[in-house]
Image 1 (cartoon, helix red, strand yellow):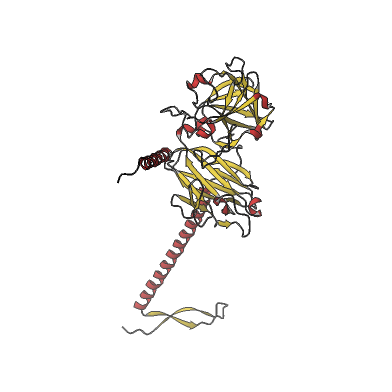
Image 2 (cartoon, helix red, strand yellow):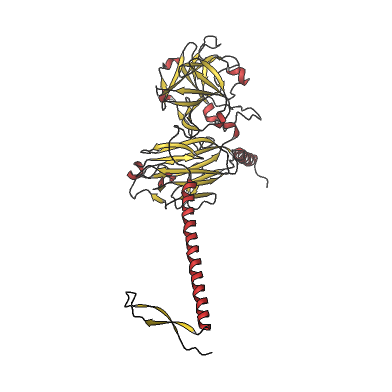
Length: 474
């Protein structure tokens, strides 16, 4: 008996959904390098997004080096449950130590370091962290839970991640992620913005970036579970400054975000659909401004994401973009660079923040826009701190990150001890051979070794070795 039409349609629908899900999973970015380490853990930790972090002590692609044993620490009994399985344990170092992480594909990698001080001793730790010879964290303390993320170029087959405790202190880490980044994530060209104007700048792909903010404008929080590259994007509302709510409008889009086919610049790995589906627009003649506290005296990469989900037709929006109060782009026409609606696009700006310690970003609506309600739009933004020098994010400091010195010193001392042992053994063997040879010669000549008291009236030793003849049978 044939199944009813409704059952057949339901079956076909389930098959289609399964095929779409399989295609989605298959299309998801698969990094060549994917180190996920649960430091100090005795068993793997599985996160809600499906990723599996393995214990750092038994990972075949990772080697932990230290001049003295490191300790694995677990949260004390009776303490509140950690917010993540990664926070239930930690690796604690009392001296300089490093992880050697094998690299299959050279290029840019995303490095995330998880710190969750579940004990007072961990919260009091002060230490330095370096990777590939560059100092990432200097005099770092983690008094509260934090994840430090860096994007860095890797040009070797092994990335050495080093932890150096400050004098009299310890270092610790709860989890480590080292993931290959897609090529399109980091560009080489940006727009350098100063009070004197904006100009093109090259060489961004050789820099190291520390992620400070990922903002989903007018949208909900995006987590590693529903985003790409396992990133977190937070809502922008608490960062709005000097902005009247009457000057902007919030947009939500339920349609399909159209990514350029075959594009090597714009993919879902650059930013997920979730952040392009929402936006905050500005009215003509008004401004919308965001302010972000940042460390002063540093250079920043600001990536602003745009996707026109508000217009009914092309060429309706015209607006200005301001970076730290300076005009970065004048009369920006999003349609002229995308050619489509609901088409994502981003611009990388580079700016120096000197003494003020706050970075302000703004969009200003222009009255030449065709709409009376919408003139400019912003969907998402990212702020990353750039390394000050080739030696560190905060500059050059006399912190020795070279683990080869520690290992080489130990090997050198062992080699010297081994050499001395060989020399001593060689001299002992030579002495024994000499004695045996002399004894044989004496035996052949009718003499042998024996003990005999010896008068030492002249102040010599009362007992000494004396060679005396002995009867020998031939």
